[in-house]
Image (cartoon, rainbow, N blue to C red; front, top):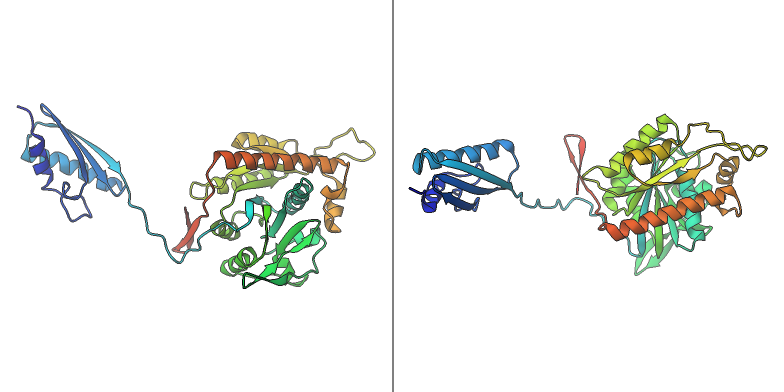
Length: 379
């Protein structure tokens, strides 16, 4: 004698899913019931992925059918989880695009001292030389160096009126628009701020500024993977990230962590690639020689290992350091090895940005809540 579907439904009306007031049938948890001879298949939809809830529901279904329908029935329970959308916290800062800015590229490094700001400055100049409109947000709150590298350390952003609102006008040099906390502090003044104050300052630099039309905004992030990084990714939908490293193992270990941060499931910022700085040294008197002072092709091998693009290498050249110190980025020089290196890297960054925009949806800004003294990151 075949088992009746209605008998099964009647049996399921005697049980409830934990946490719900209605029985399984009336609550909509039962999606379908199939009977064939002495076999019963029950499809359930639950709103919680908790393992103990799933096991309890499966056991209750089998017990109800065996006690109320057929004690020898072969019962199969299929459970699908469909969690309801969580309401957004209205107190969270909602990341939003900045009007007029097409691409926002974060330049990061796991370790300090690998030349991240130098690469940012020269990448910006190379982009500008290619005809792009470029801005730099110096987000290295505790060690801003971009104003020095562009010879604008003593400048102050002016106030302009935009649609009835007072906005900061970025300082400009070599065709690059720049904002940095360094414009608002004295050269010998240490910035001793906790995370929330630093985040507030960054938000002012981002949203209270008249950036105008930009093809690229480069964000010079501080070293590491900390609060400032989360604040930036909370405030802005980052198009992609570039990670800078030297070839040595100590720097590569931290660069690996930097890539891992952007790739974390709940952050999910596309990594455009890795740049290797201080790749090799060629003395002027021996132009054909290359000395791999910090190791050979370490960042290139890391890029292959992590399956991210290798964007290029920058040689260890004294004039790059000298150019940064006097506030004239080395990429401004023409017909030099340095210009060629940065042009190649910049072309690769543009190519990866175009590929990213063609193949991936826009990045969402993350939302951050605080629980028991630690940060929880989610989309």
